[in-house]
Figure 1 (tube, helix red, strand yellow):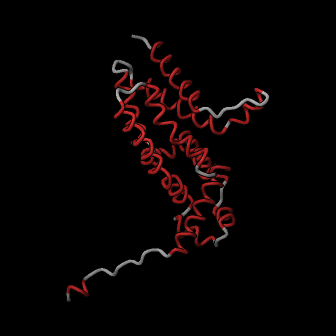
Figure 2 (spheres, rainbow, N blue to C red):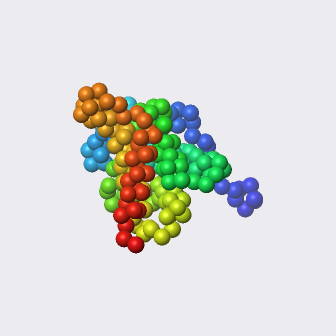
Figure 3 (tube, helix red, strand yellow):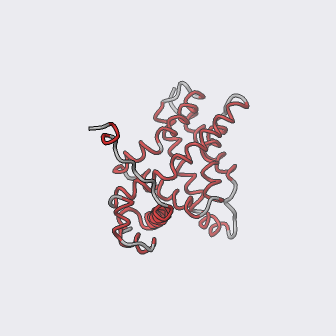
Length: 220
């Protein structure tokens, strides 16, 4: 057998049309999973919204759970990198405060959700689904935990004597507040007869004050 014949055949790069189809499928899955949850979104509905045959959804997604996983993974790296970049830039300016750390974690996603198109808003609802359902523990560990742990370490460095579980709770509560900030503005408007919930600064202050209150009330 010659060296040439022993070489593995090269795989062709996906065509532009194939990539466009995959994007449509992931966009459709993202919006439907966000609207209806994992159980409520069917492969048939995703195919219909993407305007493709069901077989293509299976081809690009690998089944419903595989498609859900791919939908979460798709934006995770971009969001994580923006958060880490913000953290590094803030650290370069001087010692971090709690508000600095929370700002670097919260502001990148809020900005994407408000300016990056409807997909980023839908993504926040997917993150909420993953966060509250233990069956998606592996997805959370892969996509979100490394960045969350990095930021949690920065918070722990500010409060070295505080129980790690308390600080982790504060971070999880902050994520919930961030998602509410984006998805519940209509409730604020209804309750305040036209009030606005667009200031990310108010959100960061709320989260920081909550963590500080938890720290100050913790037994010594």
